Length: 249
Image 1 (cartoon, one colour):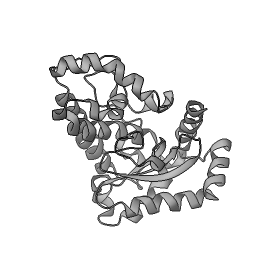
Image 2: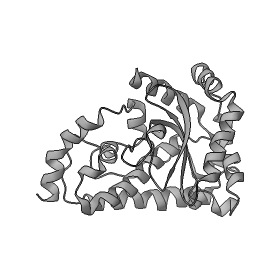
Image 3: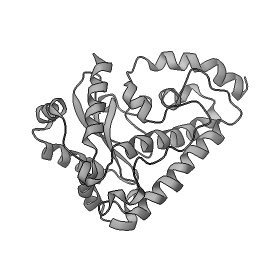
């Protein structure tokens, strides 16, 4: 079976299999899920808008070079393949069902595209950062004790991630919040690679690859993690929480 035939015939089956693990409509849209070939989503703010917490040069390189490369490499991996009834998230949830010669490329670059598409939306200029809404705030207090305790948990997960990866705030399948971490460009939707207790719908994530912070913070990852909270878009995170809850009920 050639690559085009495989992906065309498997798209619907993969989508059906992925439905057992809920994906909120909000998250799917925010993650840049769309038909192939994919295009690089625009930043929802100017590259300098997150200064001084995240510098403009980092944003330009991170978005215009690194994210763009994930999109280009994913399109290249799927070049000539007609993907029907599917999107990037569905592909990530069924990596083992893809032809072996493109599995690693889809995992790394598809994960990179989805993770970064969400990451840009989870950030906003500091003056617009706001706070968790009432429902999310209550859930944070119930799960972690306080917002400060949540920040400490995420920062610890990010600081302890060896090498490259992400730290996440997720809604698990039981509707409870949890902080997790994944290596490289994996994310909590990818059940084939993520331990059962760390699977769920990400509603906030922080990139701890060096390209996300090294120009400004050099080797001081904890300083970057502390600064990150000044530019979190709590309105988007709250919307993601509400949508994720609906998908698990």
